[in-house]
Image 1 (tube, rainbow, N blue to C red):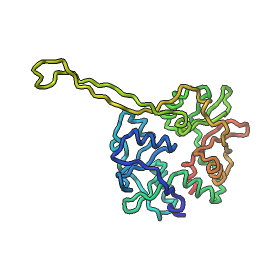
Image 2 (cartoon, rainbow, N blue to C red):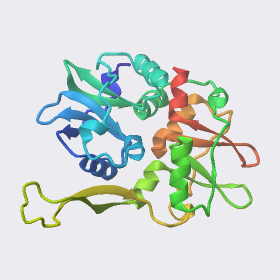
Image 3 (cartoon, helix red, strand yellow):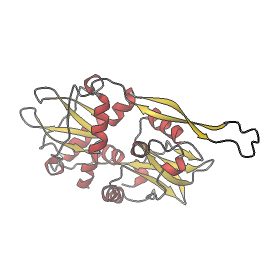
Image 4 (cartoon, one colour):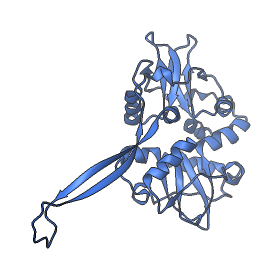
Length: 276
């Protein structure tokens, strides 16, 4: 199977020149984790930007500075196994599909899992691909703290437990975006000093107004916006069946439970790439 067979052709992208706040608006509106950046008025790929870039550099206003310029790409006629190897090796989630410097589409980890592995018969159990070191949170955790835990643990999703330690939900970074809002704030910066050549000696000031947009997370507990109908699997679930579960529910990770219903790990779509 080739990359062109499963790639997304209708790509959401940003343009340079452009502002970081405009790019963040686009990412939130489309509920995506990142996007390619092209030269304005063309489809020439010049970079990529992700939600993680905004959290690492919240004060950067210029998209050209915020984005990553050294972009790994793939050809449309490449095999999906090559795409999987590149994604795993570089710990990427997406690869722009490019030919002659022109952006043709994008292939993501989810594309490979949902559109390829889910349609392939791989009977191997997922037990060897499970991540057993899982960061989880209590259902009463404030959402602002949840955001920080997710950021510090570099997790895209966190299983949610009740006071008895039972799995009651899961929250992904996309769920945070659904309930968050972009707040615009303006700061005044004053540079004191008389104007050069001012013979009257007025105490004048040069005032600069800096406007920035920030993602604001509401002050509510995680249980109010978590996904409560959690799709789960066991360590004996096959790779293909696990991929089908992810494809049907449009999720990127599934908690793994034992016979008692206790969570024992998490499997992510990127883990399933190892199977091919």
